[in-house]
Length: 234
Length: 234
DNA sequence: TGTACATCAGTGAACGCGCGTTCACTGATGTAC
DNA sequence: TGTACATCAGTGAACGCGCGTTCACTGATGTAC
Image 1 (cartoon, helix red, strand yellow):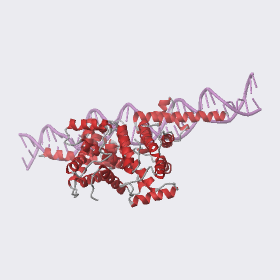
Image 2 (cartoon, protein in one colour; image 1 turned 180 degrees about the horizontal axis):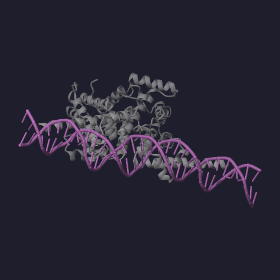
Image 3 (cartoon, chains in turn yellow, orange, red, purple; image 1 turned 120 degrees about the vertical axis):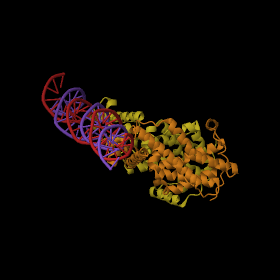
């Protein structure tokens, strides 16, 4: 019981450390992270941090994993709480939630998708499946739309370049995803387009040029869905 | 004459410093840049660098400006040396050159479009026009295609959201660009889509998923041009 | 209830490091007469 | 052609700084009897 209590306090302190880390990064950028900086924020001595994380790298990894999970959670929440009547509408809500999460958590986004942190290499076996996981929500709505006939892929998006098709086919069979190659392909296209706008927004290059990013974003994503052959209800 | 000689030698050393800087960043990432690191590469003493650049920030700014110019040069070269018979074909060559430059110069790309360097803020008046400049090549080919009738914007890409249209209209009139709003709008869309794939490739998130990035990239850009209403010759 | 003991979160000092930048200087080169 | 001088690229020592990490420790808390 007392032991349990201790574990809870431990976890609370570990959380406080992570939160301080996020705060520091928010203020100073991804590279503003330091053991000593965290200690200062928490009014602790630097070595105290080592009771909770073996090293700065270990803390960084924890932060990255947290970000992946937070993003995936946000997408799943948006999907299951969408009030849209169709799979296509829910997909759009997920897509909008993607950008919203990135804008609300620019540091998290940079940890996942930004510059590699110098001297730090995220373990690929933690990273790759996590990237794939953020696909899954979108892909499954695409698949649903495909099966209900809401999505009927049209030219030129129903033509998959052979090399790409081979790769997607491998991914599907290796992971036994219960989906059509075309769903995977269209999800990949949406995924790249969405990242273009989000990256540019996070790094402040697009606001100046389009005036209103949320509207530009939603418009482009709607347009893309339409061009692919999804019947969108406006 | 001797003075001239000195200036040339001076410029040569400044170039050597920049090249060493690029090399360091290529090896260690954007944050691996340091005065002392450069000095070591060039077998110089750190203070010697200060004969050529007032500070590390000044050097960084020079590197960023160089990158902007190199990218713009590459795009202009691709446009004027394109063997494509139509404006649309030349535009595609420019778009392909964009990615090629980024892949060949990942550090340059990151300097322009990547994480802000901690503690460093690029002077906006150097940065914003430079971003605009990289638009110009693409925009002018779009404009040409529009005027020859090669490009006839179609639904949904001929509908510009009012807020965005207002912003683009402002940009055009403030800078007196001799182009139609729709050209600017379509260029913006291409620009965001292209960056999505390039960012993901530079940061190593897409190779795993699509198998062959160059083919995926060209396909998506062609598809987008087609969807916009450009008659592409395959 | 009261005392002896174990646990362990957090301390304080220290390590070796690389950093940007300054300063007074040296010594080769090229100029002026 | 030969000598005195100015220039200035590059040096070497030093500054104060923040970093990640180690180590032996302390002292409050909670446990066992």
